[in-house]
Length: 159
Image (tube, rainbow, N blue to C red; front, side, top):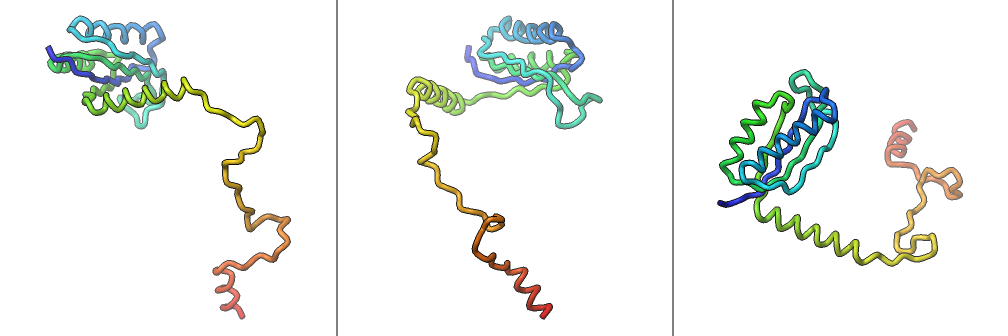
C-alpha cells in the first residue's frame, strides 16, 4: 500500500448555503477516508469570481483538499466529482517528493523566523533604505530644467 500526496481543488455551486457546502466537503473527506486515505489539510476558500463563465455561472465556492491516498483511488474521486451536482469544476494534482521537501523546508524556515524576532531600532527613520533623489518635475526646484531630447528636436525643426 503506497500512499501518495494529492491536492484536489474543486468548485462548489455558489447558490449553496454554508451548511450545504459543509455537507459537500464532508462527503468528499469521508470518501477519502473510507478508501484508506488520510486528510492532510482541508480549506474552504469561500466564494470567488471565476475567470470565465462556466455552465452559466460567474462565481463559485472554492475548496482545497490535501490528502494522502493510493493512486487507484484518484479515479474514484474524479468519478465522484463528475457525478456530484454541486461540484461543477475540479482538479486533482499529485505532489511529487521534491515539492513536498521544498514545502517542508519553507515551513521550517518560517518557524525559525517566527522563533527569533528581528531587532528594530527605536528611531523612526529608516537608515538602511537608500534615499530617493528629487524628481525633475518638482515645482520648487531652483535649477533650470534641461529640455528633453524630444523638445530639442522639435525646436530645431521649428526654427
